[in-house]
Amino acid sequence: MKRLVVWSAACLMAAFSVVAVLRPAYAAVGCRVTYAVTNQWSGGFGASVTVANLGDPLNGWTLRFGFSDTGQKVVQGWNGTFAQSGTAVTVTNAGWNASVASGGTISLGFNGSFTAANPVPTGFSVNGTACTGSVPPTTPPTTPPTTPPTTTPPPTGDAWNPPSTLVQPLAAVWTHQEQTYSNGNLYGFRNYGWDQLFAANGAINYCVRWDSSARVTAAQRDSIHAALQRQYQKWMDQMLDNGQGWNNWPYKQVPVKVVGWAVRDRAQLEWTDSSVDIYVNNINENAPQCAPACGRFFHQDNNYSGCPGGAGRHYDHSLWLTAGFGGGAGGDWGQRMGSEYFMSNLTAENIHIFLHELGHTYGLDDFYDWDPTPGRGFIMKAGSATQITDFDKWMFRDWWRHLKSRYGR
Image (tube, rainbow, N blue to C red):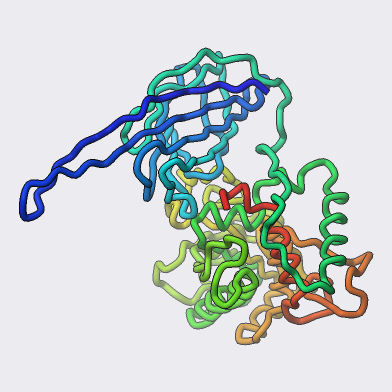
């Protein structure tokens, strides 16, 4: 792989402030940017950007650069929030990589498109400090990816410390998943619950697809919202040891907010306040659906410019509650189960079908045809447990340790 490199000289900015007496205060700012086209195909390309901080520690950063007028556009980015206006691109830090030590680096990546040509961007700057200079582009590889670059396996020395009795069955589970997804999508897929959570800086938004003719009171609405928060946190708690994040896990509490309801008939919802957006008779898969323009499933580039309520009212998951539906289903789009089942378990300690389906959203597999822990039972083996077990916890943590490098952890 050939690399395209953009270098800058360190820049020093001096400022003066008055605190009792005149005293100079200096803030050293500097950067070096390495830009690489990792692959390229007809009309598209993948690129990586590495920013070395040559100045004082950063607490929040904004990277800016400019494309040429050749139709270059960012299609999907990761490890930052990408925005583009004309040829100008702005990337702001995610919640977990805002702090950059002196000598530290920021690693970003994106897939892009172009029409006429794909020259190296120019005008790189970090927090307003220019990073100037470039070299001519070299010819990149020509293999088009179907997904962003894959994540490498976890490094030696990570905090993999499950109980000794679980080491072998956990290894068997991960080997099974790698073999099942032998085409590379296990690591290449970019819309697991993990991706959604980090893209939203540690919070999750829901849309409720009310696939029922029953009416819903404001009190029932609020109880559904509260149940989602309690049940969702049960999986998040598996990443904590004594209240601290395991293996660089950054979130102790994950706020869950319901931002929209989708129904066939507005009269089914017995409230008039505007606490949630309401979508009426937008039918997909023979069920009401919130606006696709607001859905993470439809906009994995985090571009919610077409969402009526704005980016703050986007939804990461759908809670699809269907009258008469037996069992459940789950994936990167959300979770589905019977409306009667969910409503009758609003105050239950464990809504076990929901917990099972949410596990699928985060990548955990089904176990219909084999059992890595014969006779013990766990939430992801449907019907064998009604709560998250220790084995479920360590399967969940195994996903994190394999994917955490894509979030800079």
